[in-house]
Length: 128
Image (cartoon, rainbow, N blue to C red; front, side):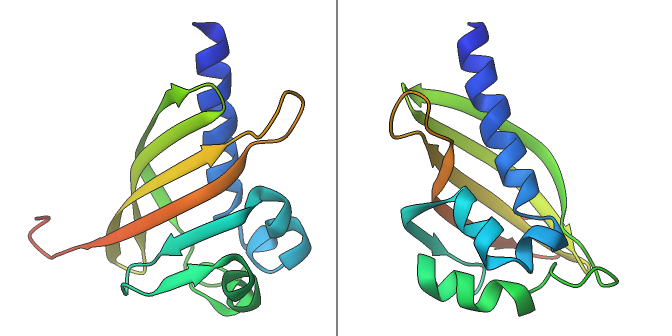
């Protein structure tokens, strides 16, 4: 069981790092946390590839050190299979809330966990 909690903990640590403005403004650091086949469906519904996200990440919400930052809450994870962790949580930034789901994968023993897929869904004013 401790291996599972270690894997989930590493995925959570990576997810939180991706919300850090210093990571968001450094494409080379962000790239290390993202799987080569990364895909995201953002809050707007837009589909992002790895290269598209890396190009825009430095100017997206949460990137300015003196601006609003992502505030994650209720983050939980589960090991779905060896090398695959699913995280779910909510974020708030600038008063906007979103429910989020991420898949982190580790390609081989000794490899680092990387974000493979992420999806965000806006939460309306009533929290529905």
